Length: 438
Image (cartoon, rainbow, N blue to C red; front, side, top):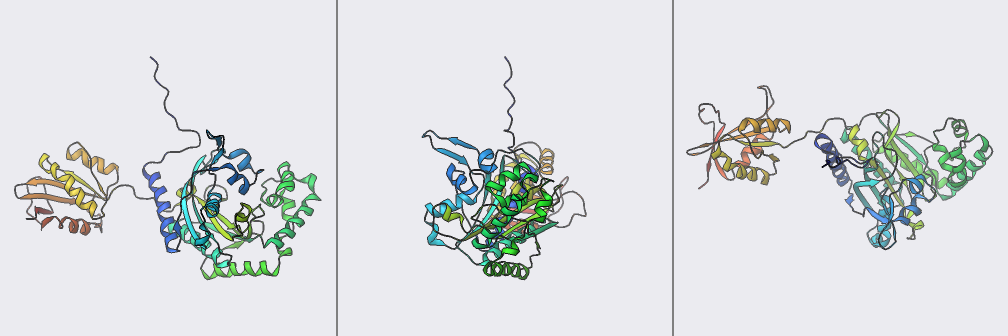
């Protein structure tokens, strides 16, 4: 009888364990913590939406919609799609769930997204993003706060060598005039454009400024700047954003070619870029999308937001994230084994992370603790008048005292009388004798 085929993951999907899983949680934890300090609150939206939610917001002709979305029909014949991004679902919920009553909303979320594209470094078909949005505020201060949120998060993650690139797309009037100017410029040189840029000239001309094709670069460099078409109102908005960033201590550089292609984008566009992954890559990007909710059938609602890839941030984090529990509880003899669950419960109730091996002698359990990078070992040995304990802080006599030591002893005293510095016994040098209270 032939053996069944070995189980394999779907291409572009990934599994996390150990340090990778810890890095993932570290990024998510820091994101939630920094967001809380800025007054953002968590939101959850479905992984699956009606396909039109994304087709209307991303554009029917974009690669994401035409080539990359995971779209399928359910049993009722409805076209559904696994979400490729967060903003569309959040805006759909804003309309369908009546969230207008809570505006302005400062929302944050994170989770899996899905795009059928070629897997590469830091990019997967199931990937994960962090996402922050301010919905219902037209003031430049909202843009500044979101940018400051992202900047502080990157600093706390230890992501070095990142540059904030900042630009404006102007108001509707400015953007419209600039778009017309770009169409005239590129149309005059249509035959010199790449095939992809000729397509964009018909559907999304601002995106030609994103082109990486060598033949397009001279034409892009010669294209008119938005500054030549800027209304006084749009100029004042961008000036306020730049002054706000400076006042918040956020360094930036102007990138006049940074764009967002769709008409619902307005004013601020920004990207935090890094060259640490081999080529310049965006780690967090966002902008203002004042026309999006209205284009989905909702009321006119100003909004601004950003998103960042967790996998990329995991690779860019400065310090490795420690993996493992704070303390392992290890019995030295069968009688002490009966106390392991109680000791572990006392410590966990005090907020201390505890690990325990389920079998093996003390030597084997020490080896398990070493593999999981446990910081300390609480070793138990039975005694006629109580329980002898030794708190081992790890290998080497020069190891610095762990700040968690006093917390552990304090937790144990809630259930036991603690007698410190007992006499050494043969083969065991305890730190204390624990006696049950009462």
